[in-house]
Length: 330
Ligand SMILES: Cc1cc2nc3c(=O)[nH]c(=O)nc-3n(C[C@H](O)[C@H](O)[C@H](O)COP(=O)(O)O)c2cc1C
Image 1 (cartoon, rainbow, N blue to C red):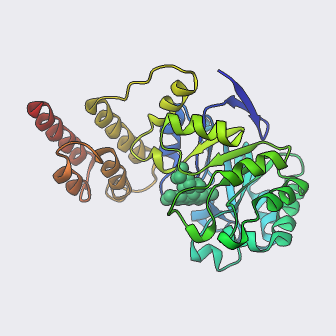
Image 2 (cartoon, helix red, strand yellow):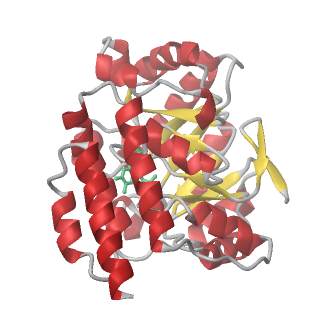
Image 3 (cartoon, protein in one colour):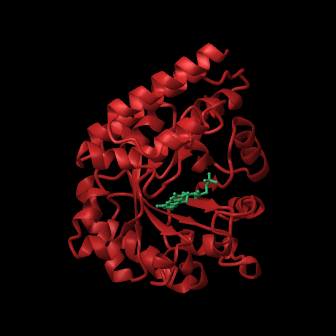
């Protein structure tokens, strides 16, 4: 297995788990790491929130040994707050600190943060310099960006060069503009252009949904690592699929019993790792249950039921009933 060194971490050159707010929490990251995600990043954390002592922000910074190597991600638009927040992250011992310059949501963009920074590259550069200075060599600082703000202003190459000059140790490029949000197809050409333009490692991201896609992204962009987000929903096996496909080995997808048994284990992990009550944590587990059931034959009624799971026992019952029906039908 080939390895690659990114932000000081030498990992198998397979695939990283993308940061995903409200999805890729501790349980999710642990599960994906077990399935072969070679690195992961925490959910975006408000630099200002952290500086003002928000408990919610600090909770997002917890790292367990099972998730490593793992980075923590900050968003913000003021260099002073970013610098202060970097210092506040250090006690959590992230393996690197990532700066979010790709988030498209209005709440973030309207503060001039996330992907809005692609419209203000000088400010983005100041933010990166402030973060690198505050990290003071204790951890590398990386950036996750898009290809530009909109189709008329694709500036990925110039932006990435600025990030590198300001001290970024690695650059992740999601092959969409801000205005695309998550729709349409990701454009991998700017990822290839960034890779050709900078010396630091480049992580390619956007629409990798299979082992074959990962192979194609490595080939078409020359990126150092592939990062996968939504295709991991209810499918942590994608990391195994990618590793096998890259190694030229045959891959067999898990059967439905294996999938749903893993779904229960995932739900158990959510409950065990959450500080919330079973009832509240189950609300978060529901969407995952739905994703594991997606595309399963005859699962429509079970998917509907997953939206009202209240306890772990409810989830167990649902799985038993689905398997009984599925196995009888077969
Ligand atoms: C629900 C959700 C939450 C996300 N949260 C973050 C985040 O906190 N930080 C970030 O940099 N990107 C975030 N993203 C973007 C993903 O990391 C990734 O760039 C995007 O989904 C494209 O990759 P994919 O096509 O493999 O899903 C999020 C995406 C989704 C769907």
